[in-house]
Image (cartoon, rainbow, N blue to C red; front, side, top):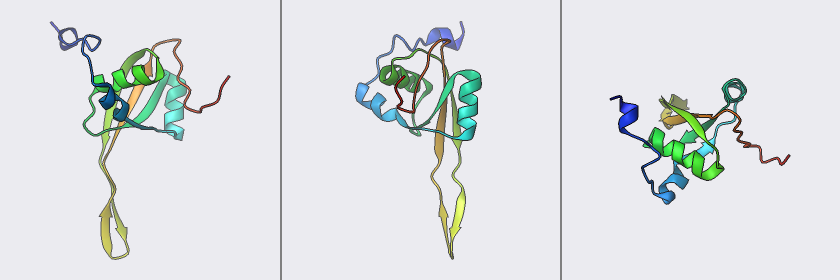
Amino acid sequence: MSAANKFNSSNVKFDEGRLMQVLVAPIVSEKATMIAEKTNSVTFKVLQDATKYEIKAAVQLMFKVDVKAVAVVNIKGKTKRFGKSIGRRDNLRKAYVTLQAGQELNLGGESA
């Protein structure tokens, strides 16, 4: 029995308050737009401790779309200098959420 069969995310109930906090912000960049056009996916900045299942449930709850897959990337914060002192940017966790065929998510806020 594979790991995917053991854990079905549709049977698990998440705390709705927690799900509203999981997605921090959409990432709108040249790379994110290119990926969105090619693979029908959307990119979000998410909490450091968010799981793929929480991210999937949060997107489905907030945007009322069907999610096909979630890929998560952890990005280490860069060390930067400010004059003599050395600072560090925060670590970042990105989620690439692929939507089912025929599903669309409009982050621009424009109505058709």
